[in-house]
Amino acid sequence: SQELEQSPQSLIVQEGKNLTINCTSSKTLYGLYWYKQKYGEGLIFLMMLQKGGEEKSHEKITAKLDEKKQQSSLHITASQPSHAGIYLCGADPSGAGSYQLTFGKGTKLSVIP
Amino acid sequence: EPEVTQTPSHQVTQMGQEVILRCVPISNHLYFYWYRQILGQKVEFLVSFYNNEISEKSEIFDDQFSVERPDGSNFTLKIRSTKLEDSAMYFCASSVLAGVGEQFFGPGTRLTVL
Image 1 (cartoon, one colour):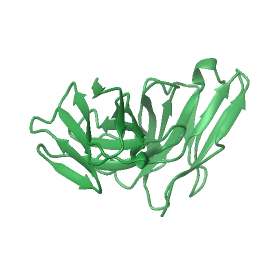
Image 2: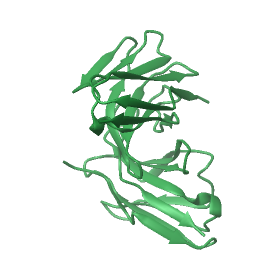
Image 3: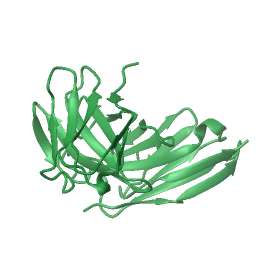
C-alpha cells in the first residue's frame, strides 16, 4: 500500500516568512492533492498535480511535483496568520483513476503575528 | 459557491446503537465518498459510491457499515452497531469525476461513542 510521509510534522513561523512542506511517497505518484484543514473542520482543496515537474500556484502558495513523481513540496511565500492550519497531501494509491485518496498525517502550521 | 453539507455536526451515541450520518453532496457531482479521521490520526478512506452502488471500499468498511443514496440529494452512512473505536470525525466528499478531479469535502460529523 502507498504511504505518504509529510515533513515537518509541525512548523511555527513568523508572519512574513517563507516556508516549505514536503510530502514523500513510497510509490510513484499519479495524482497528488494538497488540502488544508482547520482544526475541527473539513478539508479545503488547494491544488492537484499530475505530471512530473508540474508546478502550480494560487495566491502565495506554490506546489511542485518532482520529476520522478515521488515527492511534492508546498511552498508558502510571505506567510500570514490566515495560512495557519494543517496541510495534508493526498494521493491516488493505484494510479488507475482510483476513487479513493490516501493521505499523509499532515503538517501543522502556526503563523505568529 | 456550492458546498458539501453534513448533519449532524456532532453525534453522541451509546455503544451498540445504530447511527446514520447524513450528507448532501454538491448537486452536479456524480461520485460520493466517506472518510473518517480518528483523533490525532490520518484521514482514512472508507467507501466510494457511484451510480447507486459501491465503487470501492476499504478494510475498515465492514458489514457494520452501509451507504445509501435514498433520494436525489442525500447520501448517508449507517453504522449498525457502534463500537467505541468508531468514535471519529466522519467526512463526506463528492466529485464530478473520479481519479482526475478534486474531491470536495464537507465540514464533518464528530461521532462520539460512549
